Length: 373
Image 1 (cartoon, rainbow, N blue to C red):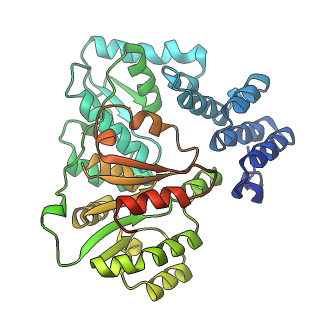
Image 2: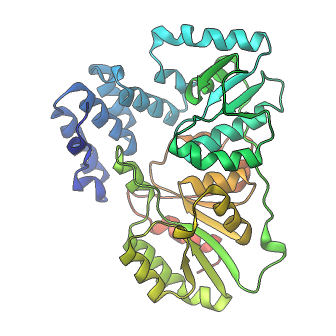
Image 3: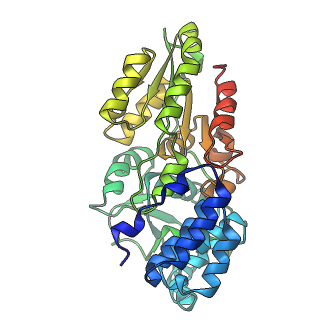
């Protein structure tokens, strides 16, 4: 078991010197105390874009015996856009055993249940894909939510009100077979099913009927990831960057009578600084208890801007345009989502870093897109 202390990331990962970060991470891998910890440290290389370095370590260690190592290989394969990278997540000797029941259910036209796992963004992405598959000539698929899971409890009411039955089920009694989302994706690759993403819910774009005061919905931070803190750090804007951006936009917001509804999670001190200095920014995070609350804010706002977090997935799968801020080495899913037909390609405009941990260029691009420059 990897200890909590070993999960802490060195300060050097939070600087702008990518080459130094990769070199020091290599040293940390060499100094790992056990194989599981080493697998986790190897996986961090993917967040630094060192995919070949990651593969080299995977080839000469036992990291693939652990989930962190297998996820690292999957990420490296997705970054290289290799065919069907999901095979990396299951031990090769078990693939035939795992795929057998799925193939049999499909041949008999029996429903396949996909267990929704991961964060809200992962679950929305899977739901959007399943929705489109059920409109095509493919085996019937149902989504299954695990009762008692925190993330599932958040997303269940939204999906239940958005996706028509019997696509969503909370029991397995009527399912011929149940599979995890990653194994389901691997199986789709084996049968070469078309990958498309559909709208889970449609929301009205308020652009045609503006309120007295125009509103833009924003989110500048992801939920902290205690296991992979570098991932959530890399995708989030530092508070000083957020504050400087609000200063840069302040006159344009006042002139255009625009309010920013900011759903970022701040400390009490940070929220006080924002509300004290910027009367056109409202911190709404405490008011959001469910995805339905976020949808209501999406419906009120003419534009949406977010880092790589659930707001982006929710906006796109609700058929709303969203400006997405991405780090230099983003989650590899975006290589697929922005290229495959469907709501992500249609509704997401990326603004990506050109230098490691440097948000200046993407924020300039975002400012032009929002006409706040």
